[in-house]
Length: 210
Length: 382
Image (tube, rainbow over all chains, first blue to last red; front, top):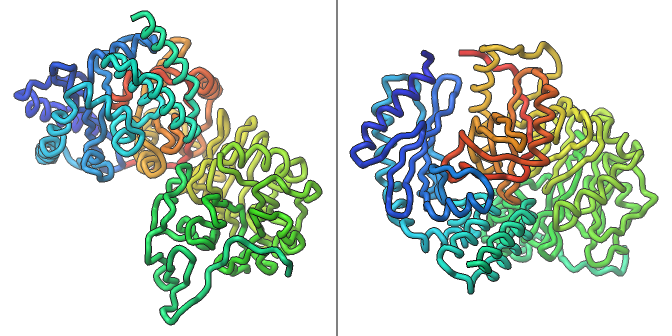
């Protein structure tokens, strides 16, 4: 077994041991915990470098209803591990991406503890902060710093904002969202604007029927 | 020189502080820094303009900022990009900006409010000196002007959107038949004959359509925040030290931190090449994170035809939000016909992200994903 595979296996196994008392389950490289609105998730990436392996950790929150309706409207198969918002750990504390470098299998426990510590510092409070659809909706509506950090693809953020508005029964706000998001997408010359408008049309039909 | 009154007084040395007063801000030449923050909020299509302490987009050799707000600017938020080559002997910076044309050297002229004020004779003279970027914002370009061996490059018509920059200037004026040939000649891009430095500075997206080959001279740099799109068939970018070249659906490219191989053997297939590829991918990720919003590596994309495509990296343009797949090639390993057809399919119909991305990007359907190729030299195996 090469070092890459070995480190990956060891690190995931170490983290599983640390996270399982907190009711996190593992699915491949994702650790998830069920909460009333959906799931809290940690995603671990492993990047092979010449003499080391770099590890990057992301935190994400899934709002079940939002994701399910979004998938239905997008006509894509439902995936129970897709998330609504999230970011890489470093970005949560307004820094650059944090990468942990492992150059030997024996470093796995010490680096694993560093990862756990960082997750404890900023990850848990992130999960706590965005534990309601209202809070997630606020993020999705924002096209500046927080929105771009936690849901970075502009047209996806726009679509999910509309979906959240639907679930929050904010019909009154619906046209305003379309207008403001359209303006924003136009202002950045986003190539997926028409896709957003088609999505808005599909959702509007639902509004009418509902 | 004329009765024209320029709306934008230029910077001048003022009191005993020896600071260059640039209208809105004071600039300390010894430090290369502004001493006060820029009062202009910046241009959303040019992220660097949000950095309130940088003079002329951190590139005073190429840009000037007469108002203290914009680089190579005028007294509005209408900032100008300049396409300019710097010959080895020029020694000219745009700091000596005058609203007419600098005298026979590196910079062309512009007057946003009154194009008639531009002394085209001097603009051409500037070009003949080997380093030239003449700009006009309102399509007032004399139709008769063509590139000759005297000019590095003619004009850059610049607008507020990437589309404005490209279509008119490059395809209709800047690179007509004559200009297209000129661009293929390293003489033009690398500066005057005998000159060794050529700089192609673009601030926004530049599209060259149907250009079979862009040949750059030694030391050529593509600098600034930019994407150079070569969208013709079988486009090949050869040589140079190019910061980023995007070749659309086919072709080769090199990235800024590495020199593209110009000879020697290519990499073969097999486990060793896969290992080289993985190492190269990690190197490329770090470069990508500086320019893009990084979405994931080794990403599985389900294509509209039901097939699976693995892409090395998935990134997003932080300005427009456009999504790109990034493929890393090492040595001279070719882009196969299969890859090219998948590139085309993915660009026109997109796909669904299935694996290799954090959950927030999982299960997204994207209607279009274009592919960028990065070519790395052969990587030494550990």
